[in-house]
Figure 1 (tube, one colour):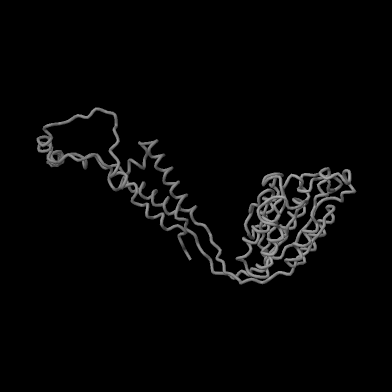
Figure 2 (cartoon, rainbow, N blue to C red; figure 1 turned 135 degrees about the vertical axis):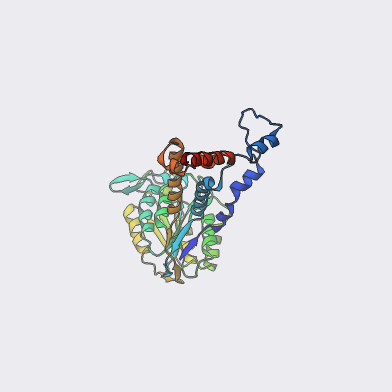
Length: 358
């Protein structure tokens, strides 16, 4: 079925004529000769003087180009038959801590020391990419919580947003409660039993306006299931144990993360290394999908390129005709000289022809 996505663009069709009527005439910069005896000249010539305006035949190519451009701007498209699309899966938001402590390089990945955020990007990015059938979104939180990517089936774009996350982009503190509150706001309108939040942090709540447990109770009321992940190496493995601030793993509030998961009927996981975080991703992959209402979709084939290409072709032909005014094409359309002569000259030509025959 043929359809114009933006049919209102065709309302611009009379725009050139309106501009011609409303705008003042352009000044050519040449002196103008005023003739006071124009009626006498018209009587001698036997015809009236008229403005040297282009005829409709001369304007037709430009009118056609303008209409073709409007049709292309209206986005013509061909819609196929409606095809049912089964949307089954979860509405899954991933909230990632990007506070300053996530830059601590105490994680191992492929034999190298990497920061906690880099490890989350590598493993959770693959986790999001493989969530076929799920709507996924991304929240980044520090001192504030921001929705970086809304719920979408475009998992590749969400992973790209996660890869572009920077330390401190949302502030240096950790607002866990605000991140949960933002996730509840985005998930509450989705179907029940499909609302999932995965919260990844390495510290305790020390920012924001909502207490994490208050936000967790609100999430439980809205049917949002929260899986919390505490990330960071064992404090005894790196740094000097007992000195708070030298190793950020000492600041991890595991008790609150466990309670948040318990209130919402989720689970708490502890990731001391890259291997453990990978196993956590495999465990989360075992969540059962929830079937949602099937929808219908039509395959749309864009057709704007055809009128656009035709308008370009006509423009090129007009430019060529202007550059080579003595070409054969214009000579064919040019009127014979005797048709352009005054009526008196035509009568004289007829008399000469009759005299030559005698």
